Image (cartoon, rainbow, N blue to C red; front, side, top):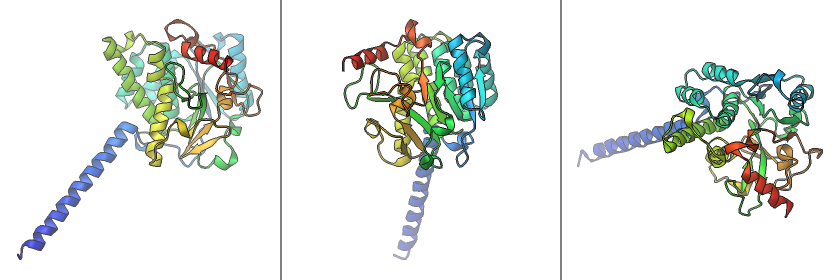
Length: 324
């Protein structure tokens, strides 16, 4: 019996070591899968960087009159914000420079030829890498960016998303979610784990799409559903629910977002009602662009309107809205 206490101490120490190893492994695994502030320096605790990001296939000088005027209006409404407009070549240069140590990102982005998948991915990358506001080239700034976050939420907000689509619990149109966020306008501080998670999920989905079609990244033929789920609003929405559920320790879903009539802060992400970024749509009780709550107006003049990326599901949603 004299060896009993000694054996017990050894057993307790061994068990403690095993528990610590398991916990460390789980933390490491979460950082790899969900992303973490350590994978990219974050600006948490500081104001969001005052950069407006937009992309265009051609030089801004080659834009149509409406897009050019809207481009200028972003500057007029936000004179203290730097405005970066990246062309296709500029997007490649940014990724090669900013993410030189992330071969997974560089390999997928530079290998892609599909314009919509690239356009979706670059918006998450510029926000992950440098932060600021991303907004599609076919958007109009209605209110200064500095007015987007109510004073009571400014110190606690690290990212801002807006509702695009809300069925209020009813079955959505095919390929859409019950509640879905826009990805045409996003605000975030750099290094946000949500953006890291979105990028990782997008890269994984794009690679899976190429494998499913048994083609190279440059040969991917993505339809509407493919884009929505791999890089588009559905992917961003799903990633947001995942991030917030993990961050808060409780399940976060559409139930926390439906029917919003005022901004709602969940953990460090401010969710704006549909009228903020989704005004002018004929569904989801969206207000008009002249509504006081409208911040950005999306003109829907991009590539979603034509070809294999045709915006059929949202068109169906608009039709349903007209008849509701």
